[in-house]
Length: 188
Image 1 (cartoon, helix red, strand yellow):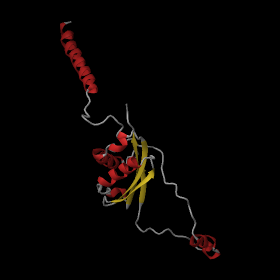
Image 2: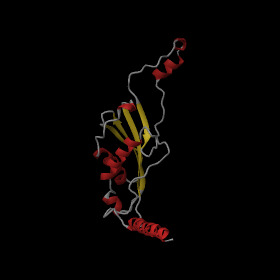
Image 3: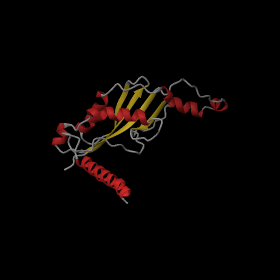
Image 4: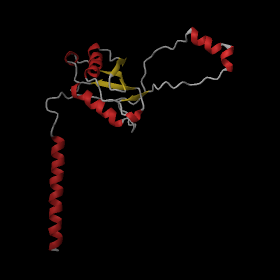
């Protein structure tokens, strides 16, 4: 019986110590002086700008000309490949690269001071286009929050952290478009 107690007491003590440590670390605020707000969240739905589709006369003449119906169309591979992915994507192919982008943005992104003082809140959706060499080709506002300070803050933070790491060679892409949703919320 004494040998069982000799084993049982260290297990009980270890359990109590670990439970205390887990509870204590959950209660400690490690963010220091960062305001209590949602830093970055991502949206799962596919977002695209509302650009009306217009057929040009050239396209219409090709489409309707009888001589083109008999010809076989052959796709030309010019080597240019693009893909679009959401910053919150769980696609294994992009997960590591997207995490690098997200961490780089989070290091410098903050709530615009004037917008914070005016209690402005909203969601801003930005599409950033990254070339294979990591250069930022475009940062485009897709959805506005309705507040210029928040919109400009999101677009400017993307521009300020560029350039990015080059796209991994196994992506086999010339350009990667990333859709990021910046959610500005002030908590009371």
